[in-house]
Length: 396
Image (cartoon, rainbow, N blue to C red; front, side):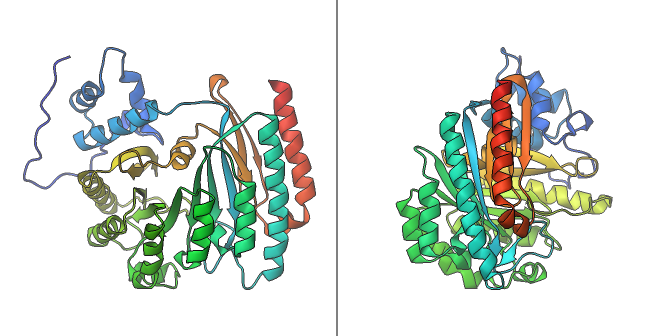
């Protein structure tokens, strides 16, 4: 195939009113749509040219799509490799638009202790299932705020979730839970990465979300993570509330200055929130402009996309993209966002999904959303979960 010269951007305002993917690729996973055009005789640069010249995909989006597809093709799909999710739903506050069931520890002291005991029971059951089914735990993520645990409890949870060669991630919504002594424990147990659900560093937006701190208040906690040599992922929202390019540019700049090796960008809302879809064309244009700005900023800083999926597909079709420095991508985020591995969930508001890629089979078991139902019904939940895996075994 003859290579085409991609034209340089002309010095004129770009028209953001056109769907940059084109209708053919309007999908939650547009990379799946373009994959059919990648023949054995074609390389990725030729695919990019095809998308731009023949399929009329915006050439920046063609580049983003092809890079994301290239990473997807490099991910091994092994049905024996699983992800382990352990949720600890306690926080100091919750965002106004958060759909997760979170509790203030100070106001729920009894529930906190009972929940911890129930969670340990479920983690122990998962250890039995992992051993029985010969699973390999590829990556672990502690969601919620596991650093809200007291040090002996944190030590116990990390010890129970210790598996050889696993990537270990801790999600964090509130940086104020970080202490040097807890980071000592985290480092001792081989935690690879802390994923901070920052959303934004903008003071006005933080107040609108009811996050009761400013960036200057939490800077020292980010510096502590850097001092321990633990990889840092920062999750940001593009177009959050009333933010525009000025705020987005500052958020990306600060994330880079903090030493983040992964910067995951979610369009308009994070993975734990829901908003009404944009229908105003002017607002859609502005969102597309910000997404393009963010992509150019991060790729110019040496970051490459490693997962991509779209939301608001019927209207804006906006991309959510994980960016990482070379060799620094988060395996947990990569697998979970592409839905390619079995996920074992422990705790409230988690889902266990058994995936068999070769047979295109997915079977799920959902834990209760309510902490009271989880605490008082834990034995029944564990019995049902045992039966769930027994039935899957019989189907093999």
